[in-house]
Image 1: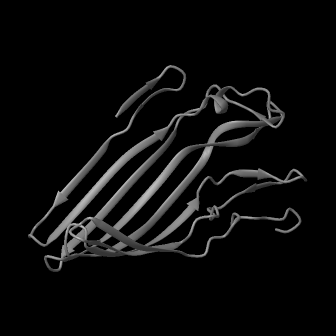
Image 2 (image 1 turned 90 degrees about the vertical axis):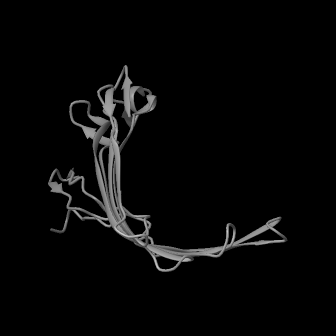
Image 3 (image 1 turned 30 degrees about the vertical axis):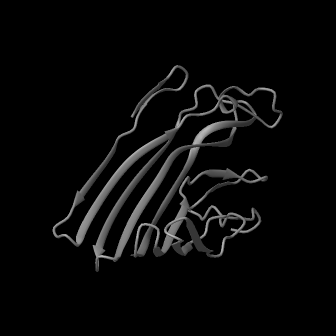
Length: 209
């Protein structure tokens, strides 16, 4: 995909996939993709905000994903898969202090990474008769490593930290079933989310080293 903006320039984002099946039951998948989010008008041109302003030179946010999957058909009705993934996001747009302006400004200063794995098991008895179970573990980190200045003027460089509000583990279990020759379809679904911290993990006190 190629996009060209008259204010933020052009961006090229490829996607590719490779599937290899050595047997009728076993298969492997490799997926790679890139994506972007162009800055909106507010992030570029806002001026009437006393807290911060836009940035006409801001760039698009960029996201890169890579996945590897192995799947197996245990029987004609039961199949399972295991997927490992890594996602990185660069040039994330956020408010950052601009000493030349003496106030906050939208800048490309953020970076996030997520790595994890997902396992799935599925039982298929018909077009609308199936059950599934999947679970995902992920490790999400803010890798911006931003330099922060305390009220006393001391500089701190953040290490990688957990950004908050994202569960480390979540899973789904469900069943789908049809009645009266597919005239009525019912679905029962349960989702579990692990513990989610409401705030960021990286906190510091300027009075303590």
